[in-house]
Amino acid sequence: MADVTTDAAATRPRRSPLSGRHAALGAKLAPFGGWEMPLEYAGGGVLREHAAVRSDVGVFDVSHLGKARVTGPGAARFVNACLSNDLDRIGPGRAQYTLCCDDATGGVVDDLIAYRYADDHVFLIPNAANSAEVVRRLCAAAPPQVTVTDEHDAYAVLAVQGPRSAELLGALGLPTELGYMSFSPATLHGVELTVCRTGYTGELGYELVVPAGDAVGVWDALFAAEPAPRACGLAARDTLRTEMGYPLHGQDLSLEITPVQARVGWAVGWDKPAFWGRDALLAEKAAGPARTLRGLEIVGRGIPRPGMAVFHGDTPVGVITSGTFSPTKKQGIALALIDTTPALPDGAELHVDIRARRTPARLTRPPFIQPSVR
Image (tube, rainbow, N blue to C red; front, side, top):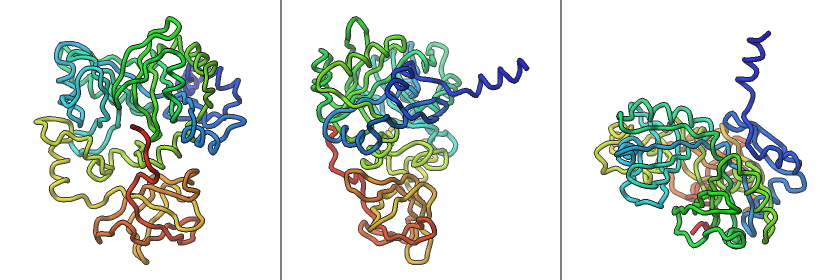
């Protein structure tokens, strides 16, 4: 009986330090990367939460995201030799989108944000499901003077997103005059936290990295301030990021989908002498990928979903990786891996197999809406 209990405990989803606040707001919960997180809230729902971020301000609990710290002499140099982007392009106080790739295949283990504090201090935020694997790979490769610490449960992360996000943080005395992908330490009611001009919605926004034990106090301060934000769940986060064409690991990026195929080569430091997957990715880039990630707009009715087949005439040419109904455009949109042969231009008419019905769709280049992130 003891073993059964232990097994059940091991598989029980982890909970955010804000789980009590989500329950009080009537959140509908769902599993995300081994965590139980809010999908949407009572009295809100995806459409209202999505609209709040596009026109006002919303707050997301994304504490399920991983956190890891790399410290010691040469820490930034070590991270730069592992992850794809060129960390030397940024200085202290800046953050960078980057990828952890498999060294043999170039496939994506995870995508993450690197915060460069100093040459001897880098903080990483990977995705929840892949955090332990990213940490494992870094630990295995780290030289003796560099320490990699898993801090997944030590911090909560709150994403404050929308055109009025700066107004909300400013009302609390938090820094808002930050350049895109820049961060600053700050204090709120005695709580030391980090404010970063990042997000996953395409709107002006910030992410607050807060000690887990102080998360409730920071959440309450945000919701007591003006302009009053709306609590937003991860369902709205998904529709917002899809409208922007932002990739989601496990769907648009994976060990089977490389940065070259996903068209995120801008996050690869091609001229760096070393990073995981360099040889495989350089070879694929030179030869040209067999498939690339493209945007699709559904013509008429129908909502595309991951796994649906895409056709050019009667020939299958790809598969949907992310698909949803766009609350902004009022139509179905999708990201899809499309064969590069034959070469299909933007605007080409394709069809998506939605519930055994061939639904017209048009190739396009994301984002699907005008971004306001800067």
